[in-house]
Length: 100
Image 1 (cartoon, helix red, strand yellow):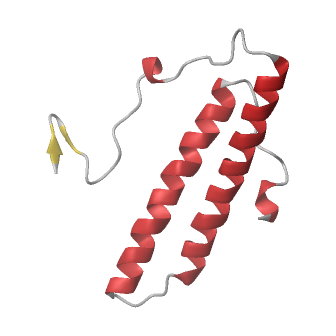
Image 2 (spheres, rainbow, N blue to C red):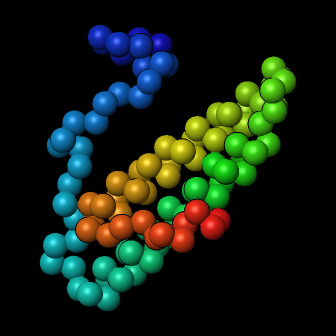
């Protein structure tokens, strides 16, 4: 699949610095706390989902493995997206996320 200058089937397009925003200014402490809780939960669940898919993939070349790889990739992009949102709001991922 071609998109202008490069093949996007090989690697996702690069983000520009304008794709990242500082968020949360002017929000109440209560609202920021709720946002943090939600983002941390979603970030952790995406890590758990990608790990589950990863450990189900075998060395065989079959349709199930192809679908598992696609599902794992999808969860990995979600994981990255939530990580970016955490940093945009000035939060950090939980140090305990790997336990999931």
